[in-house]
Length: 489
Image: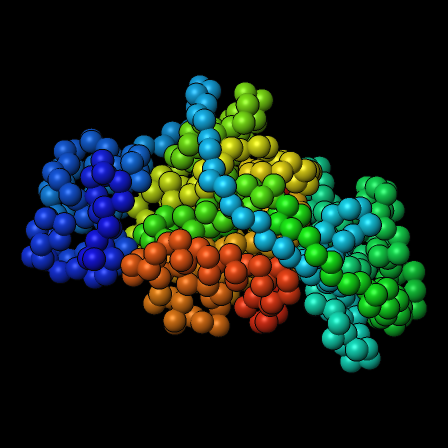
């Protein structure tokens, strides 16, 4: 196969490999060269007419486009506008029955389950990042940590010189990280004079497990490294007793994320992830989709799947509030977020969004989660946050996801503090960056039956849940990035 005509009413097709001018593809004579994953017109398209892909408009023609022409940023413009009004037009959703899978998990005192037994060292302020790293390094020298999945320092540059909502957002992210079910033990490290004060932070943790979460204020002790190592040894002694127990996928919350997309993202990897979202939802588990700007242009698809009017209203608030954030900074809400997306064949934000939301499968949207909340509802959730890879993954993980399915057509080594499974949209990327990529969805483009690929995908995810390390874990790429929108003092 040379090109893919995704939906019958689409007016463009996607090249599955580099195509040459003069070739006849899908009954169309190409008028110019078409790069892999880019689009060409299947019919004459007049100036002002919509370009249809995935069955929906991805923008309109800036000029007359002849059949067989390359369709991209030079001749297409977005249809997106700013804040909109929406009508609630629900649709009925039915998911296929599936077989559940057994997995082995760590049960926490609060009743949640982790897929890892991590020791986290969480600085409350960037001033003690280096001390946190020194505690980790000394601990690795002095103590057998082979039973611990990983010791992760959640370094960040914030926690002081922040005000108002910006400061509160930092506090909330760190609080949710400290309470994450993948953490078997946590050392919260304070400097002592920061805005993100230790005592209020402890209060905001609520009824936390005092055996598993410990605190250290560096200015109160003579040698914070020695004291930190001592506390972490005590935490590890407790963690040594932790054993996995058999449960099922209803205890799993999986994050859905894409980064560095290409023209194949909405054809291979994202639909595959969407199938897994439906699979886990059908098994009474949880999935969460974030990246609000990458819902713009496809938000009505999600709104139609809201479980009720209250949830629909929350989705409208989610979308329009993020557009207002753009407006407050005098920015347009429809700019394609990455030059790499364009190089990979993504033309407009609608083009990316219509591919992006496929990660959410076909289930009902059961809830919308905002900044200070963790995920509480089973089923598919939407989460507030930007599209930036590091920030979005931090938001998703801190909200309670035990792992993230991360699709990419361009490739990225990044991973956050939960296992971050990288899924390549094409085989060339999977082969070239085998040190980054965990699973190759490009097999679908090459003609392998998607159900067979999906079965392999489920097997791989179950292995990861049971302890198999992802590439980001093997490489030690376990980072966070906290969203910032305020004044620095």
